[in-house]
Image (tube, rainbow, N blue to C red; front, side, top):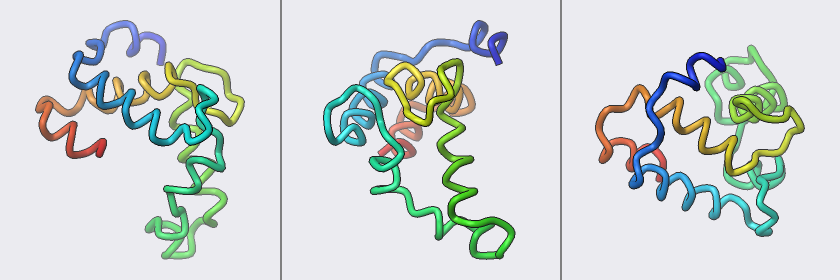
Length: 106
């Protein structure tokens, strides 16, 4: 994980602005971290295919989703701006087109 973070390209200015905007929208209380409750207000784990198929519970899917943001940060259940940026830097490494990245994050 640390190796990949060290060799991947950083977010472009356009992408960083989009990521920061998305973070601010999710950080409803302006605390500088996104709490699980804030994510749960916009992410419905019950609609996930593995929940629909009965292989996982919504709680399991939600916990796994939250864990994806803990990239190189504290595993405290909250998402900081840096963790959010790191996550989208990793995701964005597989998206060469800035316009598509923008569609994905909005």
